[in-house]
Every structure is written in structure tokens, then in C-alpha cells.
Length: 287
Image 1: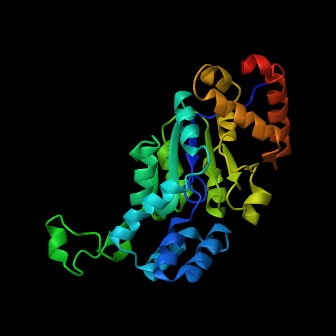
Image 2: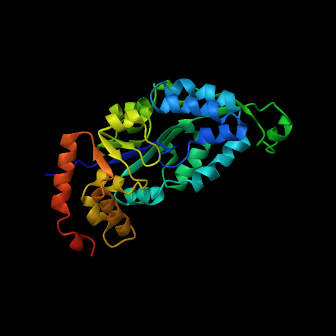
Image 3: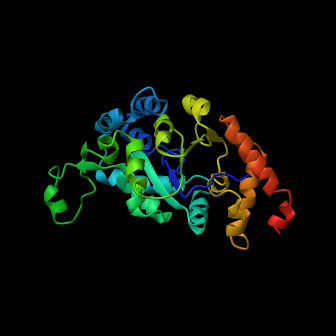
């Protein structure tokens, strides 16, 4: 028996690749944290469509371009455990990676490309700034555009294609191979219809709808088990003798500790049988 392998791995960003919700960080600094956090929570829990709160959250915060750019440093400081190493290992194994997020595009692109994900594979919310506020003439000369305030969100890819599922379908159009999505929110759960497997990530925050409905749950803070889920045991040969061998061992240790939970019982039984058959000689695998 073989485990399904996946050629495309798509990540949500906020509370998945990074341990923060960027929009909530901006809201706290603007003094409207509680109001915006409630909107975010409702969307993540599936009580409100995520697309419907984009404009409402940003209009409440009114962030400047400089504040949004500074968000990348917070994202970088709070990268999820093993995120960088997992993405590098997936690339080594020939797996293509993507980010599809309801967060703000500008800082997410900078962090995502820094992780090695191609810019064409990163989709998030674009916004427009009020270029004629304050000393706008300085910005027109390429100076001091940090104080430009938020004007409105563009008609983003997420809105035009009816959410993340439509974006993922466009990204994968014409590409061969199976796909896997890792995310923490209800919008990711809904987008699972566009991929072959949805993995609910609860290592940072647990959302009831995801916990009860995702076919697979990744409960550890570390993303290391994503390697085994996506590449199967062929990853053993792919990482043998290089710097990812330790990461692969960690993935198995987390799996053994029960950090993967299968709501889809048939899928879970298949995974366990394949894993047991392939790791009986663990000392040989990791020698």
C-alpha cells in the first residue's frame, strides 16, 4: 500500500506560516484592536465570509503604508516553528509551494519570497493608498511615502474568484499532480474543495469548525509533519545525508506523539499502515 503524494503544497499565512494575525497587530497599534479582532475571529470561525470583512477591517484601522511595511518585521519575528526549513525541504523534494492568504499582500510577498516561494505563487489582499494626503508631492518624487494612509482595498483575486478556492483553482490550472492545503481558518476549510487534501493547522490557534471538519489536523507548533504528509516515505531518500535529515526525524517524532489527528478514519488508517511498514527499520533510515 502506498501513501498519496502531493506535488503542490499551499499554505495560509497568518496563524499558519506566521504565528500572528497581521491585521490584528495593525489594529492594536491603531487602538481598535478589540473591534477588529472580533471581526477577524468571526471570519476565521466561519460565522462571516472573510471576503466581506476586508474593507471593514481596513477602514476601521486606516493603516499607513509605513505601518503595513513594518508588519513584515513582526511576521519575520513570529515565523512558525520550522516553516523555513519545511519549505526548503519541500523544494528539495520537487514539490511546488504557494501562499494564499486573506492578509496584506505587500509584507506577505516579502516574507514569502524570502522563504523561497515564487512571487507568482503568492496571493493576498492588495490595497490602494491615498497618494494625495499630507505632503503628497514628496511621495510623487519618490520620497516619504510611508505616511500615505489606506484608501481602499482593490478588487483582489480573492474577491474576484469567490474566495480562496477560486484563487487556488487558478494557481493550479493546467498543472499536473495532487495538491495539499495547510491552514487554520474556516476560509481554508472551505477552500479545501479546490485541493486533494486539506490539513487543518491548530498549532497556533484552534478553531472549532476546523477541528471538527478537517480531514487531517496538524496539532504541533512545528510544521515538520507536512513533509511526511506531502511527500510520503519517498522523502526518506530525498533527505538522506543532508541537513533536512534531522527535520525529517523530528516529523516522525511528532507523528509518533500524536500530533497528526485524522477525522477521516479511512485516510488515517491508510497513513498509519504505510507509515508503520516504512519505519520498522528506523535505525537504518536515520543512520
